[in-house]
Image 1 (cartoon, rainbow over the protein chains, first blue to last red):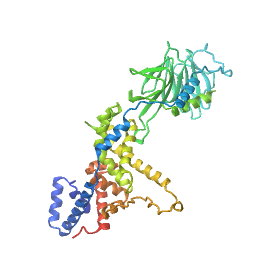
Image 2: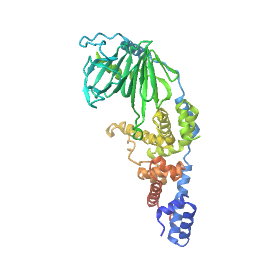
Image 3: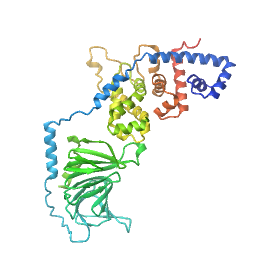
Image 4: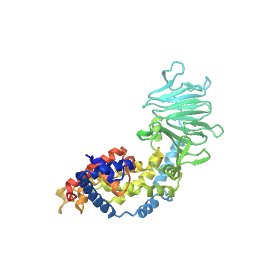
Length: 282
Length: 174
């Protein structure tokens, strides 16, 4: 008795030589199996004829896709340009003083927590615990901040650079920079002669005299839970990273030290989370 | 050149590399669209949409050698989106002076041949196997990779699909 799967595999030429020979020998002495195989062959022929009767022009498809993905000169509408200019101007305006916070740069440390709302904590190396932080706290090299989902804060470095952190972020304070293993941040006000270096694990980027939004996150998809990428969105000025200059209005994405694709121009409606950050910090 | 190399080149901005990927996988994607869409649906438009989405999402493909199953997954979603959109735009019966178009149900197909009607009436997993084997002309190994199943499961699905077709159509036994 030959099972139907074996007969179908024989019909589909999916059996190896030895298995094919075995099945064919068995069929030779089994009239019912021969009849079954003949019926399958007739159905197979009908299905092949039907498939052949359905034309498919792969050249036309390739042409259509090629035309759709070819780079086109981008022309932003005047309203979109005005919105961009407004948002960038807003982001770049001088920040008003925050009277409720007394920064104390004369104390040890390299930065202060200028503003903190929600869950903002220091990860202690000695106790391995979380110590809630309030605005005004001094931060030293090696300190690691972690923000809960509802946490927001501004870290003001003594050289004038400022780092805005969004909920869910973790950041380690280093001399001359920060490490951002996960989360979202905006760096601004770094002086031209003292760049703040931000390292995410995907890329290291010196930020000076520009405004940069950084978003490091796991790539989507179940199979890639451990793969990360970093999005760098230049909001004002420009950055130079891995030999590429990226101008304001462009986004570049990196993963594992490599640039993913080419930098692309951002759409006005992408200016979302850092605007919220800006509004919440006011 | 392997799919992984083509994906890398396409990500670096090479349109010819993406076109080669498209040509290598177009029949597989079209087979799935034929399987997942009802008769009369704009199959070629959905195939095109699949490759445009694949191009936009290419950077999210981590296992560069699996472009085929990546595109196949997108094709299934594109077809599902089309069906949902079509269902949303169905005009209520009362608003129509003329008889409405037949509603879309899984496997529905107002095919013009008994064979196509019988294929359309198969469960989706069996239709996919038939389409990938006969239209895309893929061997079991490739069908298995496309559908994320084992080769034995491909064999089982084709066996079942043929049994159902013979049962519904008759006339293949003499």
